[in-house]
Length: 459
Image 1 (cartoon, rainbow, N blue to C red):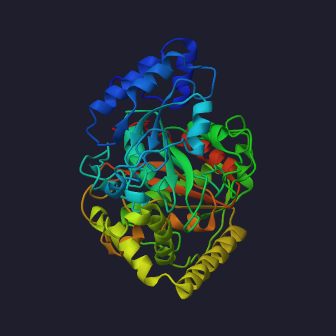
Image 2: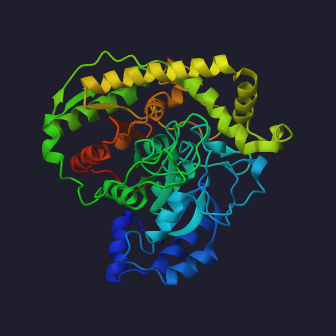
Image 3: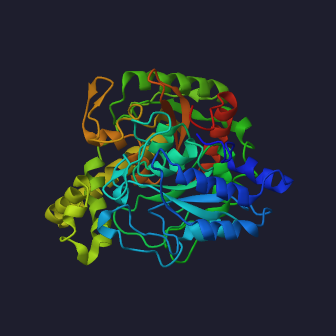
């Protein structure tokens, strides 16, 4: 979309820095230029002076040395707006970096721009009262998804190569899927966040153009932090070990369930995902197993308990700020206040237990499950969430039904480009694995990348 910014993956950019073929200052300036001429509305804040100053002395021997970093607006950066993409918090400024940003700085990345998100990360469409609609580089009338919509639109649209994302119900995988990118949702706690409240489903991550970029991102950001009691022990070698386990993939049991036993999927999307899954299965040389999968519907409980964290963020501003919120977020708080009591929490925990048992059974019967990431290709950038998917009717909750189970259970899953639909928009294959098996998912993703290479940017 822009001639100036790097159009390859992040690792190739770092290699260009090290070879002297490009300077971090040039890349930061190119990112700032792209943000100034942003037809996608992917960027909502720039920190040009600080980024250019940091670029002058960047240590390109570091993993992300000199790379401009785009940070999703739900992830605090010291001195930047800390609005949660909400007009109600438009005056708030972050007083410290979040843990992932701290680690990315240590890894050499230069925070340069902030990317748009859906309000409080609550829906998979990036349209807010604060910033308006963000658009998909594959089709400007379509959404890039959410909540990491600005990050996905900017990486896919060629504005910047490295962007953070987060996933509480699919908010990495959904926009990665809509924009033709790699999107890994890790095991809960793999990358520390800090304080946690609400339904304990959200993880930090990135959207990327290549599998190796995601592996390097994990190397830089994973590991425990005392501020996050749910953070996991450090795992080394995500990039170094990438591909080492490909020869062992033939021993896996793989299930292909495009609708994951819990969603309505458009016929064309289902056809493309099933074909991609069969091709990946053949490349792995693995055994296919059949599952009679019926995951319980947890979207209602997930949404209800998510209102707890939202209410905490609003604090004493509520209810005076109600009119500043988008309709779905206002309704989320109102419904939570009305319905959350001991009985509601017991019901929500019972639903979580039901889902956990179903997911455990699924992974007892299959090592890997292949499914769709999204029920259909990207829908309209503005307006209501769709309830019809390729002629098949469902509800608005269907939009995250394929991704939310892994958030509630806490297992890792990755979205990978599977091809283009007849409307020219990306379709995404989702690969699910049991807890702590990110290296396995990355090996499968690398094999798929070699088997079916995808365009690094839109169009």
